[in-house]
Length: 356
View 1 (cartoon, one colour):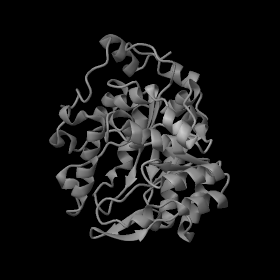
View 2: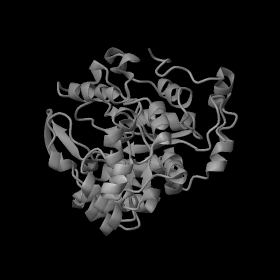
View 3: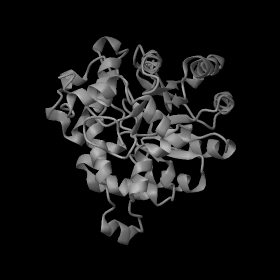
View 4: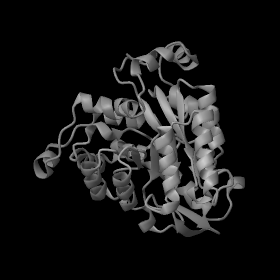
């Protein structure tokens, strides 16, 4: 059972993507950085929280303490993974700095893991950064973005099937960590073709021993993702942002999940929110209640969900990807600062209550 004072749930919940974003104006390198900030607040609309947190409050330099409060006090999340974002061509600190991610893991190692954001165009320095992050600072994955920018314009694609990526993918194999890549529509002046998933297919075939997370699975390129999950057992669907659709856009979520589930890869779909893009709790509640609509099962042959599948989505699948012993993880957090505060409070605080 969950070790908190908010009621009991069997599931051990792992939010596979957190972001302590820095949307402060002084972090913008150019005017198009604003489009990232605007798009990010727009995702609040998917969970109906626009009345709970204002655009002004959301557009800020989020601290690790605020992110931890939202994740572990205001929601049922038991463990989470901070992803660094390597967008230092739009934002001075990359938008989600590796330093913040590393610090969260250092402060709360039983609660927070991290993926290091990597720019492969840095060549040998990128390989060294990946090795240092994993071997010295406890990173458990590498995170990539599919495009680099110059002066606010889409410039070079970052592709897993290009030669400069091979040393990084081979280093990930050597280190025993998966790689994750953002695959969604671009913000700003990005080129949509750079975000498609064909390069992941090539790399998944070339490196069958390496695990690949397609982040934002279900939001775009749905048919291609479905076919890739069928054909490559080393590809995983990460539901960052997609999970938010389950709150207010239930039909859209059911269609996305139906396509992903019809691949048969029930054990390779992992829950993530991208908090602070959205608050985790509405998405958790909606996923716990999710059942496939009968007409989609009849018309498309989509499978229905089972309690075992939901438990896997919420945390079991990610735990298996990383060899995390859930019972040991539960025991390690049973009397930490967050569990004690949950018990003292007795009921879950209001969403965004720590920052509004």
